[in-house]
Amino acid sequence: MLFARDGYERTSVDAIAAEAGVSKRTVYSHYGDKETLFLLVLRETYDGMRDRITSIVKRTLGDTDDVGPSLTTCVRETVRAITRAPERATLVRLIMAEAPHFPDVLELWRNGGIVPLLAEALAPLIAAGQLAGDPAQAADHLYALTFGQVNSKSMMGTIELSDAVAERIVTGGVRVFLRAYAVAPA
Image 1 (cartoon, rainbow, N blue to C red):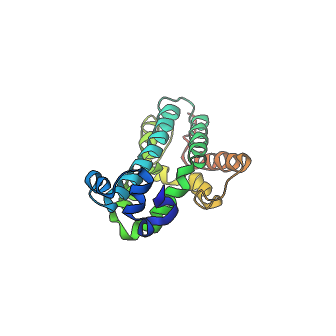
Image 2: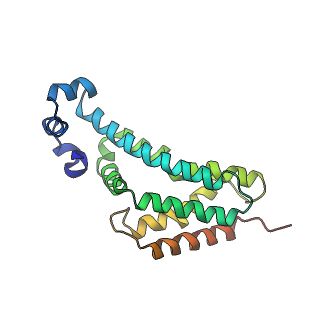
Image 3: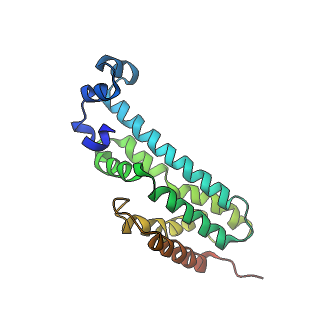
């Protein structure tokens, strides 16, 4: 991907056309302009990653009687999915570099991501009395204790984490989360 290698500014429509094996005119007729193509590439990459995470969250937290192991499995599988996705570090770098110039890129970051997915999955567990608290705040805390640590230790995916380090982050983070949000048995 040229945008990943060269960034938005240094990627020309001529280079895009050459890479795709089409004329410059074809690029313009399909996408209108370079900005539209750039935002489309970011959106499709982001949506693909979000779809994978959504699938994991629904499968692991959708119908559970044992919150602790289910949360651990959910976070573990999501961490594996995001840390092993080659496009993740590239996507994060592009979003961080280009967000000040593209408000639509900021909307990807603000309105998407893992936290809303977690809040949506935690809400029924809270409603059922398996966890306590506000779903949005609980999701923020779970994210900070697990995915936030993964992002910090891996420099947002630029440094590979060993399985042992990732597992320590996941199990420790979920354990601390449950100390705050688990409901004591009656």
